[in-house]
Length: 266
Image (cartoon, rainbow, N blue to C red; front, top):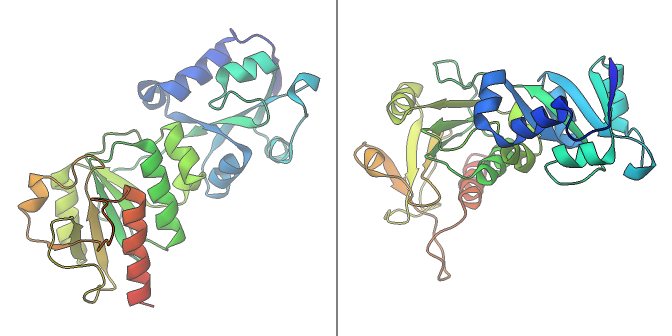
């Protein structure tokens, strides 16, 4: 079904704005907002359900249908053309040269079958910045990680910033979420070597072997791993740094460990 929207006050445009801005609205409807043809196509190719496509048409937008819009149209997905004003109202990037999609979300609960495969598992505790989470997902996919576990996350997994910074890869990676206690129980039962990161650890990354079956735990961007994790019997390591920086960006830290894991187990 193809529709056309002229007014930025149209109910569908208002709904797109709600989905873009409100975690509650995304959870109520079980869908999320995605902007960008490549990100939408990545989600579709990962088997995720794209429900609607919006694009700006006419001379004011500088172009007509792009390749991705035509591909989605051939798949029978609802295509909705908008005016420049309407698209700009809904757009995350305040642009008209692109497409917006509504995608069906999925469960990310934690259970015994949540994450399969022998690659490393990345655990993010209290992660709060959607851009960092998306970037970590991208790194985990690039380095061949088995999946990501979110422990008491402070960010909505389907936040548009997560989608954008992951380049749509959120649909390809095995991701689960649970409380600290649930995550710890899963880790203990997984048979993986559990390794936590801290700038106060005495062992440096690279100073010893990394088991082929491992889980790496990272703390929040603000305060690192808290008291709960310090009370557990797990191994601690730190990333050696020669400069004056006291810490690294979360995604950089994850990439360092995954690179070293691959080097040690190649």
